[in-house]
Length: 242
Image 1 (cartoon, rainbow, N blue to C red):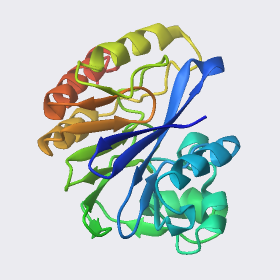
Image 2: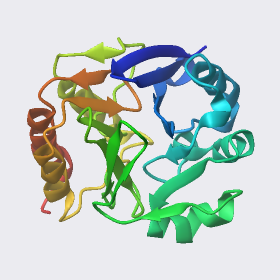
Image 3: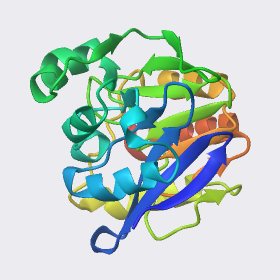
Image 4: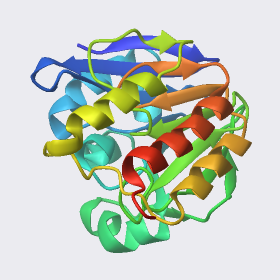
């Protein structure tokens, strides 16, 4: 079952809770002249995500498919969406296209440059290359300049069947998860590089009002403050001697 919540004007969170992982998986649909779906979810989630999208628009109208990095919950059902929506086109970094996506996907991706902007109609987006943030060298994030929504993938992820939107500080939840996973299988999920703090602080400079994380509650409020605190937290917990 997919729960649908509007998190900003014509911007919707489509979320399924997976008890086995104690984790929510969210996709985000921007309803516009050229609808954008950020995250596709895994192949097994495609019917549920399609149903959620269908409650908002005709799924065949999806024009853009965005995601951060090549991973099952980010783009696992991309080919199902490309088959369903004849005009759909994936967006990713040049590295992402050349190393993974153009071999995996049924149609070539649009290779985006850092800072490149595009419009879906009423919404204008800025594409941001964020190598190794949250994971992988091809990573990117997407910022909706119209609603000041940062689609931040796994940044600020936290577990549990939590509320769709929160105005409290989600960083405490994320920090607790990092500490809990320190000796587990996901201990090295978030790399800390010489560029990590700079990239996070540049995201904060965008002054986002909505932080749309894939796993957990969407944060609404002073996103810049949360991101600057996140940069310090990542250095504290992961930075070592970096």
